[in-house]
Every structure is written in structure tokens, then in C-alpha cells.
Amino acid sequence: MKKSASLIVAALTGTFTAACDSDGPGPVILTPQELCGDMLAPASNRAGYAQSATASGALDTDGPFFAALGTNDRSCGTCHLSTQGWTITPAGVQARFWMSDGLDPIFRPHDGANAPELDVSTVDARRAAYSLLLSRAVIRIGLPVKPTSEFELAEVDDPYGHASAAQLSLFRRPLPTTNLRFLTAINWDGRNTPAADLTNIRLGLKNQSNGATVNHAQAAAPLDDATREAIVDLELSLVTAQVRHRRAGDLTVLGAQGGPLPLLTLPFAIGANDPFAPGFSNHVFSLYDAWSALESYDDEERRKIADGQRVFNEKTFSLPSGATATCATCHSVPEVGGLSSFRMIDNGVSDPARRAPEVPLYTFRNKTTGDLVRTTDPGRALITGLWADMNKFKVPGLRALAARAPFFHDGSARDLKAVVDFYEDRFHIDFSDGEEDHLVKFLESL
Image: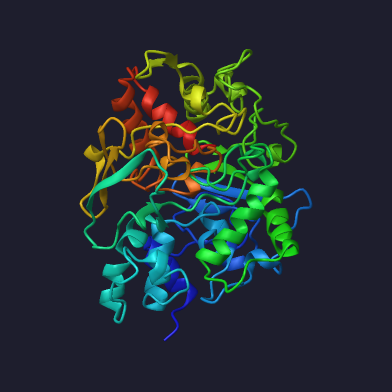
């Protein structure tokens, strides 16, 4: 029996308090967008509200992005929801499971299940088969080890018995389909970024839209060029950012430049402010500069966000190479926070010490040296076949972070505090009193 929209909200939050004209922070996740049908309306998250915008002020929901173009009822919108930062979240996935008994189009064995052969014949079986999708909002990506690679698969520890050199099981978060105008790499491993022209992001996005439709939507044939163009047009039109913080309130007042509207006209060029090129500035974010000078007691939370921005831009630590860096070194695109050029980074997330028992573990052997690497996901190395690319991934943009937890490519960080704690441990960052809390609040305000 179909369950009501109010029950969806209650299942996610334990309460139902929002109305279509609400503009304040609240506990509900599915309003006002689901209740009012406006994908450009603010959508609540644990940190406040995020909002999307387009230059026209409208969003065409009749185009191919929202159409089921394959054979399994999925569309791009199945895994890229406006209310969830244009990706998916565990709470959203769990609500869909509850509403459909695990039969919603997002639940398809070939990439939604922990392995494609798992039993999905009953509700309980589906709950077990889709456990990683439900808990981490990750999709299974099946990629082979190329015979021409500098390495070979030496050992597999897959709790589901599927993975082999012919098809590894790699569990990755769907990247958001917004703020794509600021991209320098497509996919976590960059596989759809055109090798012949790394700056041709539009072509890469067209390839990505086709690959996702053929693989995830199981289309019987590739998309025609006009359909690809229409999907990419919509994606490139979208910007999304946090517009309200649960404690600091409106992120666009008193000189602040939060929210999505400034992104519509923000200049961007691939390679600008590259940390490995002359002229790099670590003052990547200036959104809340004006708040640092506020003096009213009522503005304390705003000053904390401004200080968190300072921590992001200026707090130094040492990289494993010995170089000195700040958060802005890898998140260098001004006011957005991606990496300025096509470059993959090993941030330690795939380290075997972080492996959860429900995630496969792989051991690779260098064919020349015999060296071994154990990892939960080799990342870029599967695309290039290069040993030097082992465990390297793209650096994602940071706007609208609060809308799309959990974090990292594998969804292993449940919230932004967990992300900051991870990097604090990895780089031995010596935060002073309040700096970690202020940094989290700043990230929540992006």
C-alpha cells in the first residue's frame, strides 16, 4: 500500500512541522521542495537550508535528466535529488526503501546491491543486499584491472564473493550534478574527463551522461547527441549552496556572500589559482570576510563562521611530502573549493586501516618490483594502469556540503566533524581552542 508524504517526513525526522512558506531552520528534510514541488526552493538539512538556482530562475523538469531513458525505470534524477544536494543521502535512500519495500528504481541489483548475485526476493533479503546503499548512499561501480596495468590483483577479500580482476566492486558516492561549471575532473577517478583535452568538461559530461544511462539505467543503446546535450545543459545551469545556517541564520546578510546567487556570475577558469603554479593564493574563500568584524553579541555565531573561514584559508600543517599546506592547498578554486587543475590526490581514505568489515579489501602487486598495496579502492590507477596513481581520487568542490552527507568517495565520514577529525589525525593539525568547531561551522555554511 502506498504510504503518505507526511509519513515519509515522519520516518526521516520523527516530526512534521514545515509549511510551504517556511524559511527558517527546522527538523524536516523533505520540505519545502517535496511539499511544494519547487526544486529551486530551500531544502532543509541538519545544518540549516541549502538552495539551488539557475540564471533563468526556473528549472525544466520535463527534459531528459528526469526521464527514464533506460530499461529499469531509472533517470538521472534517481540518484541526483535536489533535496539531497543533487546526490543521495542515507536518510533519503532509507525512506525510499521503506516506502517501496525496496522496489524503488534506485534498488537494482547490478549496481545498488553489495553484489549483483545477491538474493532480493523478499523485503528482508533486499534490506541485506542493499545494506551499503542504505547505510552509506553508495553505488557499486564494477571496473576491471586492465591486463596492461603496471600491477595485478594478488588477493581479494570480498564478503559478498563477487569481486575479481574482471570486475572489482568499488562502492562510491554519486557526485552532485550541480556547480559543474567549476569542474576540473569528472567522476571520482576522472575516467570521463577527455584525455585528449582535459579542459573540455562539456564533452566529458556528455560522455558521463551516456555512460551513466547505459550502465546504471541499463539503456539498450547509447544516448543520441541531442539528449546528451540537453542533460548537460541542465547540469551546467545549476548552482547550489547553503543559504541558511541553523545558528547563524541567513548567510547572505551583513555583507556575507553565501547562498547560490553569487555562484551564477562567479568567474572561473581551469588552472586559475593552481597551488602548483605561480601566483597561488591560499585566500580561497572570502564569503564571510565581513562577518569577522561584527561586534554585537547576537553575531557570535557569525563570527565563528568567519573564523572557520580563516582556519580553512590560513591554518598550516605538514603534508607527508614535508610541504606546508592549508585546506586551501587542495581546495583551491576560489569560493568553490575544488582543485584548480586536473590532478588526483591520495588523501588516505582507501587505507586498509580504515576498512569496514562490510567493504571489500584488495591487494595489488607491482609487476616490476613485487611491492604490495592493500586498499579498499585503487581509484585512478584502474583507469591509467599506473602504480603511481594507486588510491588517488579527485578533490570535490565544497559548496552545499551540508546537504549531501556522508562524505569522502566511500561515504565513510558520516558528518563534517568526522571529516575534520580525519584530517586532523592524518596531518597532525594542532587546532587551538574553538578552531575545529569554527571550521565545521564554516563548512556547514558553504
